[in-house]
Image 1 (tube, rainbow, N blue to C red):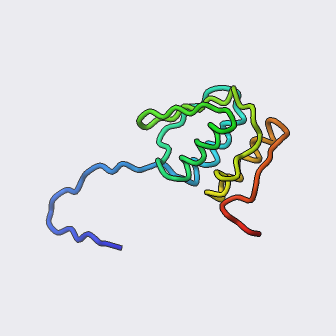
Image 2: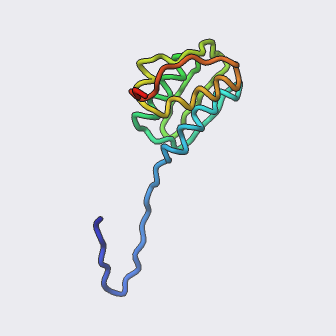
Image 3: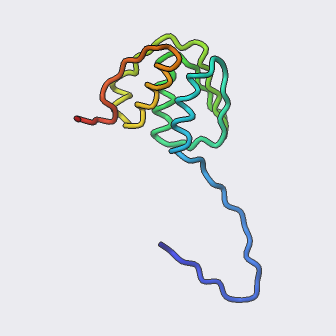
Length: 118
């Protein structure tokens, strides 16, 4: 890890933008299934895992609209309860969709997540 050595009697100040947490965002994205309508999320990190979560939502019928630092997810048109295997295998945490699907629709079909051969 780098270090900063500050010498002198001058005040140090500045701004840092903190990105959203992947581990917080993924379960929240899955939980949008439980709400029958639009959910707006802010500061969702733009990384592979969140993009895969959005793609899974789209594949089962949700609408996902991304604008700058905001994501609007509309789950009113979800009509499928099967998570496509090719998306499920791209990340282990995709399995968190199962709880939301079963909780709301009493139905879910999925394969092993994240290329796990258990």
